[in-house]
Image (cartoon, rainbow, N blue to C red):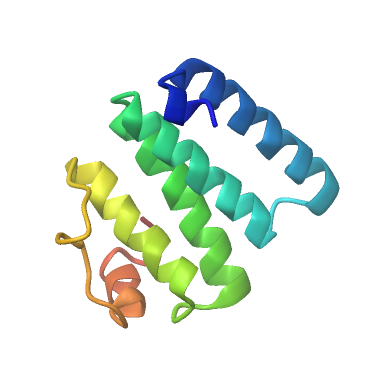
Length: 113
């Protein structure tokens, strides 16, 4: 809502608050927590903070990987975003890894991104 209006600071505050609420209600290993981390990553990237965006999506990826497995679409998307944010490249035409390559990419990084 705030992002669409160009109010990125309020978007950040609301996404952080949403994450806090989800953590309290659902615990740290829930897909909705991962989704909130992903949303924070988007906001941070839009603010130009690639390091924070990468950190949020790395956390999101690890939750999705543990809870949903490597082949789940949200797991794969989260992993792609880690690379995209880290490299500063975001767009539908550019991906960091191919679909189905999630487990191999995580292996290359020793299971830790």
